[in-house]
Length: 153
Image 1: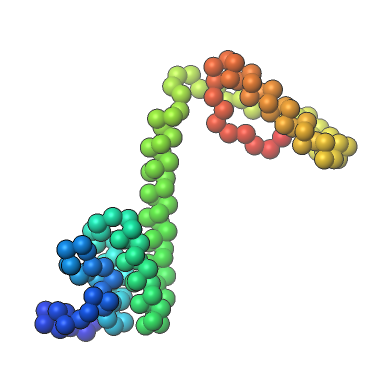
Image 2: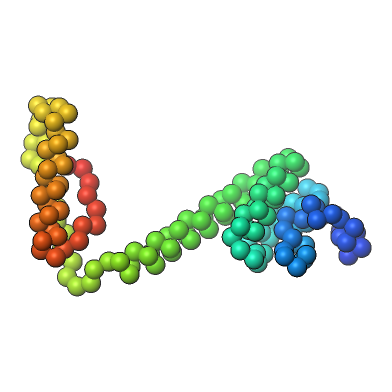
């Protein structure tokens, strides 16, 4: 990586950095290919002021990578993994408080001969399926239960 001493760094414009915080502190230099690679590697170690600032820095960094002919596959992989983990954490946090407590009962149902019934009824099968699901949902709610998911027939 090319050396960027403090004098040379000070002479660079703000546009040569992926992130400039509200106090003017400049982070993640992207002035050449080696610094772009370094910024890609250090992106997750940088503290951003908020999600919008992080996204702006990410976009600037990706534009710089494109400009220098860098395909940041490892960066994309890391970003996707982080987003998935963050999403899973948010889903668990929201979902747990909304779930009922106590005894858990799983109800599995099947419409016997559903394939033949679908062939016989055609488009009318959708109405039959809706009526069956409504009947089951109503019964579950009347018994004080909660529906978590409904799939297939």
